Length: 187
Image (cartoon, rainbow, N blue to C red; front, side, top):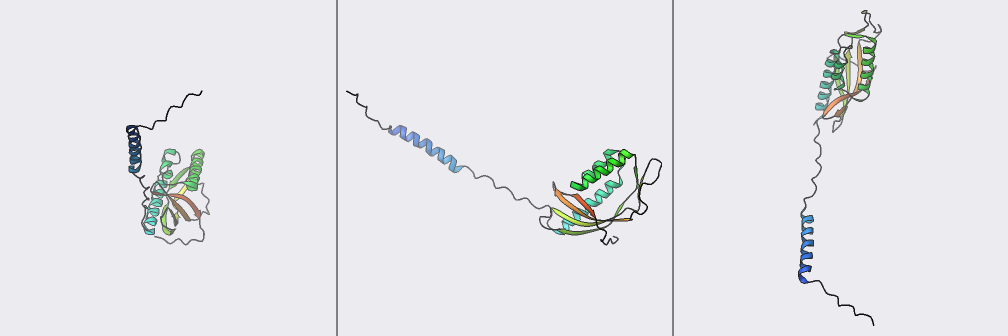
């Protein structure tokens, strides 16, 4: 004879009520949880092409001022240039200034920005191109004996198409290409 299976008991109404209450509370908490905060849309740094061009010009003029303060024998003075540049432009400066320092050459005189013209930029203005004409006629690179290391046939004006890229809310000089066809008009 097989023992009789005890009758199955239904859960007590109190147990059922408690379980449903717990489930209901859990669902209420999940249902009431705030939606994740939307990711804010970044506000553009510049509201117009004119503002972007003005910022690019300010950056290049600050770079030129920093360049005129460089002491090729003191690499600490190079840092102000690196703060205003990135990419190919910064890499070229690092190489050139390191070579000047290693060879004991000195920069004398100064350069001036003789012309600046914004060429292109589109919203959100994170990339700006400009024509920059740099007058290098007052700059010389000399060795320890004071002899110039500059080619006597060097042009006096250096016309450049400069690309600026937005980084950390500021435009940095990222690239500069010589443009012999550019018309540099004096400021």
